[in-house]
Image (cartoon, rainbow, N blue to C red; front, side):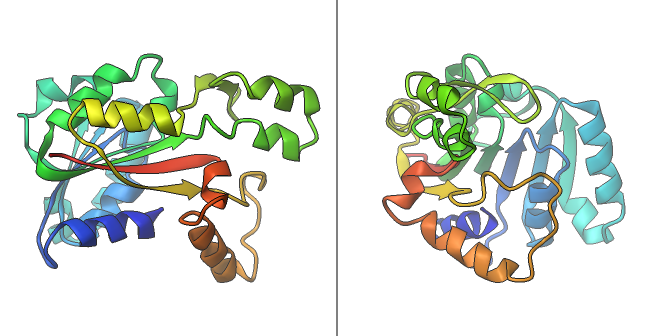
Length: 233
């Protein structure tokens, strides 16, 4: 995922340019911190108090230069217009958020408005075209059969959430002025890995396989997640 984002940033902006990045739903701030370490000016937007506390603790342990490049704002991703002016960012991230939003269209439109011309919108969504894969691989045949005709599912936290189909997202991105530029599959072969499992000895090979599959048809089409990259016209 990080390599894919770096690839898109490198392809869109001059080498060495310090970008203005907005990370909507930043969680613990892992991605935000990584980009701040790379020299970018990062704003993390998050509404969960526990996540914010964890992110602030992690940021406090960074060198002064990194702390100065990152700010954390408590707020809802649907209220970006309250916090920022249109066109304020070169890159907007929204990773692992849309599945929790029942009506994502207003959120997406707001994110696109935050982008400067030529800016990059990076989304990570649950793949609605492959919802039958996980129950099918677990041998849960009734669940797999039901998953073909829906975009609703229950995640590993036991929450009822939603997925997005590639064709629908392509149309939505075009409609908000940030047409799909490229897309990747994420967790093609590793979606059934147990949470907290030990890191395998051949993890670098595993990552290389996932990276290759995530950009190669037909494998990327059955990934658990889709990484979608739109560009503001």
